[in-house]
Every structure is written in structure tokens, then in C-alpha cells.
Image (cartoon, rainbow, N blue to C red; front, side, top):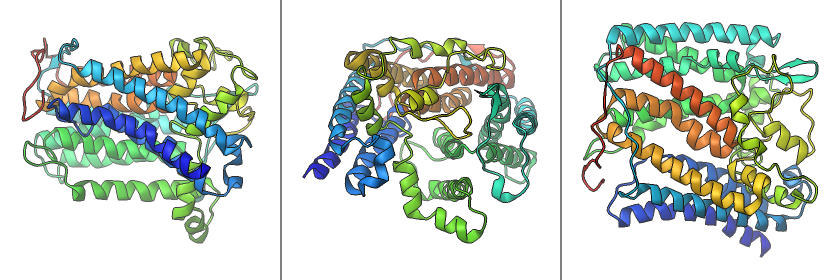
Length: 469
């Protein structure tokens, strides 16, 4: 009976998010497939709905680490926290979607220069390759065989983990290079067998290499998803009468799924095709997803509710402002506050040691972080503001996206994951730091490829297309 109730409770936060979609339809507004709320819902499905079911229906020995040996009944506390969080988020999201809520105007850029775009895409791809080489050199690693290509890597100075943020940023430039080349290929309707196509393929290879080398599987997913969003908004997969066709999105995600499965097997120590098949079986992959501790986890909320404030003190806002120190390299300031809260959360709440391990931390997620700072009041207020921010962000971009403004599409794709995935699935400061960095980089790129031609926005009124307001 308890297990069945836990499964049901896991669906409640997801159902609350669905209310936002239902209300928009009732009000006569379309729900766009790639609104930020879609990514939030996917995160909640994996970390709350799916994980609650996995914990309730599997052998308790499998989730001892997730619940720190607490009984399954503590999940009721986590479910309450998540229900409050999603209710506040939806309230903020709907308020900001109201036509009376002010829309933030954006600057519209001029037409892109084909020569500038392809030149920059090629340059960024080369810089990405250089960044990967510098990263591997900094961590003292080399790729000696295909079986070690996706190993976790890190650098330590005096026992302190160094994030190598600038190395990682340089190595990640393959992604904007690939998206630039893709947008230009679609905008000018060029064939793959062309200079544009050649740069697209080269940039795609560079963009795909970095997630494999860094061992960050989610970046491969975002690479494929970013391409699909561009196809959608440039009109290749979207029109008034023709929506996304499943066949058009299956191939890239099949390729990414195979790559993610392979990376998972390699990380688990597979050294042959047979071992890879065993470690990366569907059952093992499902376990890695639902027992990983990633995403907006109901189990993390449950454990923290038992620990704070009895065993672990409130942070009182400390973690919410650490993004301000993000630009300073840790090699220059070893005691700099952690932008990502994963290692601290894993250490203080779960009692794990990260001083010498090369593995990842244990990200708390935004609702859990807000509770750690200010309790349930922090969850309610913080998630309300987060919902307002998500809707305000989307409404600012929406008119440009509907008008197929290439600059807006590019900036939207490069900033969406930080706001709608990193910020809610990891912690606030990590998301803010990524958002600011990606926004500055993407705007600078668009200014360059449009030769600095900008104009004041004319999209201050709602755009009417079908039932959309």
C-alpha cells in the first residue's frame, strides 16, 4: 500500500506542471513545444515521478545510498516539498504569461553575413580542439585507447579540486560552431556537399568529441536537442499546418542514445564489446538514470528534510550568491565559494568524500537548495520567482522565434539549457553562471555575424498566429 501511494505521489508534481499547459489552452493560447516548462517537466519526470516509482518498486537494497538508509516513508516529505515547489513555479509561470504582465523587449539584429558566419564557425571549431588538448594536458591525461576515452578527469591542487572552467569553456565552443553552421545551412538552403556542409560536419565532430572526453553525457543530448530546436524554429520542422514529425527527430536521438550508452559502459570500466553490452544493458541504463542522484530528485528533498536543521544548518542565502565569484579561477583562489553546490551537498548531507575522487558531485536541485537556505518559505518564494523568470524569458523571445529571427533562435538555444535545466536540476548559482556566460557569448557571436547591425525591437505587442497570443 505504501509503495503504491509513493508512486502516486510521484505523479503529483508532474500533474501540477500540466495545469500550466491546460490553463494556457483554456485561455486560448498555444503551448509551444520548446517552452522552458517542457524541459522542467522532463527533469521532474525523471527525478521525481520516475525515481519515486523506481524506489517504490525495486529492492530496497538498490536505493540505500539514495535514501541514506532512511525508510521509504521519508519520501512523503520530499513529495510535499516538490508539490509546493511546482505549485509556486506554475503560479509564477502563469502570472508572467498574462498579457497584462510587461514583456521585456529585445534588440533585433540584422541579416547574417554568410562569410562571417562560416569563418567564425570554423574558428570556434578549431578553438574547441585546442581547448580539449589543453584540458587533457592540464589533468595529465591522454587517450591511450577507445576504452579510456570517456573516463572522468579532474585536476587537484593541494588536495583541492580545480574545475578548469576556462579550459572546459574553450573546449565547449564546438557546440556554438556547429549550431552556427547549421543555421546558415538552413537559412541559405545549401546542400551538405558544400563549404557550409564541410564546416558543419567538422564543427559537429568537434562538438561531439568534448562530451565524450569530459564524460558529461548530458552535453550530447543538448547538442542533438539544440539542432532539433533550430530545425523547429527556422521552419524546417514547423509551420502553421505542419508540426514536428516523429521521424525527423528519431535519428539524431538514436545516435545520441547509442553514444550515451557507450559512454556509460566505458565509464563503468568495460574493456570489451561483451562487457560494454552487459554494463550498458537497458536495465542498467534505467538504473543509472533513476538511481543517479541527478535531476530534481525527490529522494534528495526527502533526505535533506530529515537533516535540516537538526544535523545540517541552514545556509541562509549563502549558496544563492556564489555565482558572483564564478569568473575567478579557483587556481587563483583555492577557498573560493563553490559555484556548483554538488560537492558540498554530497559531503555535508550525504557524507561523501570528494577530495580525491574524479567523479561528479551530488547536485541538490533548485527546490532542495532553496529549502536548505530558507526552509519551506524559501521553496515557495524562490520557485514563484523562478516561474516568473522562465515565462518572462520565453515571452521576450517568442515574437522573434515566430518571425524566424536567426539571432534570437541562436541565443535562445544556447541559453535555454542553463535556465531550464542547469538552474533547476543542479543549483541556482551554477545555472546563473552558465546563463550569463552563454548569453554574453551568444550575443557577441550574433553581433559579429550580423556585422553589428541592430535595430530597436518592434515586437512589443503580442503576435497573433492561429490561437497564439
